[in-house]
Amino acid sequence: IGLIVSGILSPTACGLIDRHGGNSVMSLGALAGAAGLAGIAFADQRPTYLACWLLIGAGMSSTLYDPAFTTLTRIFGASARRQITFVTFAGGFASTVGWPATHFLIEYLGWRGAYLVFAADLVCVVAPLHAFALPRAAFAAPKPVAAAEAPVEKAYCLPRGRPFLLLTAAFALHAFLLSGVTSNLLAMLERGGIAAGTVVAIGALFGPAQVVARLGDSIFASRTSPLWVARAAITSMVIAFTMLAILGISPLVAAVFAMMFGAANGVMTIARGALPLVLFGPVGYGRVIGRIARPALFLQ
Image 1 (cartoon, helix red, strand yellow):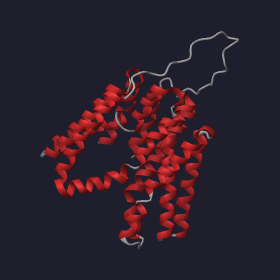
Image 2 (spheres, helix red, strand yellow; image 1 turned 30 degrees about the vertical axis):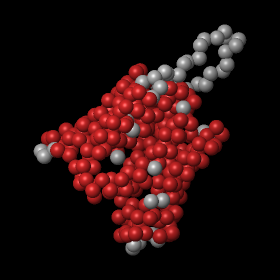
Image 3 (spheres, one colour; image 1 turned 60 degrees about the vertical axis):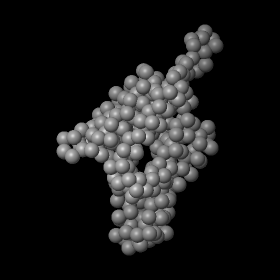
Image 4 (tube, rainbow, N blue to C red; image 1 turned 45 degrees about the vertical axis):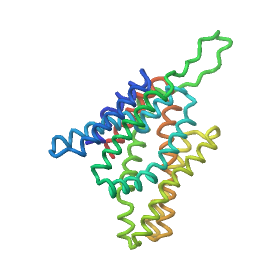
């Protein structure tokens, strides 16, 4: 329900950021998410519980990667790819930090206490940062110049028709694969005969592989097209799945699979923000990336 609500609201939330900036939209989204998380800690009826997930879905639509990419594009314009990459560095460590922190909070405060700490974090840290620390200025479009002096402008595709549909389908299918793999990988490897401790160690390779791949993208961003980065990532995933299917499950093969899939997903996250920017341009970017995100969230 949270993902579906996020998908429904994503074009609207990102479109509002296009027009008004991320300060108000992302801070209100953080407060909506906080209300949902705090409500779950006290919900004792099914309708109340589901209402909390509606709030969390609204929060996701206005605080996660797509609204963040939209905010950066509004501030930096067509040159926002490097800033998008920097944001994904932090995201790459989210599970590395978040899973142990969640385990610690549940152990010492209980699951209700963990939800309340997350809600307090959104209210006291995330919402103020979005509201007051984000720059409010939007990138300035180039001023009109005389025809003889005007440089040749980049021609962008219109966000409709075959290119848009293909791009949307590709990111939606990637989201489907990512959800399937991350939800089932550890259990699948354990059923394949790998010891539980080794399985956890293999799963831990996923996050660092994402970050290393994003670091590489940051270094070579000026010399690579996001389109070719996305193509290389998908090819890497195909090779990883083929290797796992042919060679079978073993600790070494599973570790290589986790690193290849993690690295590919790491740069696909960047491509999800950078590729629509390159193809469709910075004007109206939020609405475009929100429309691309909707089927991906539904399939997840």
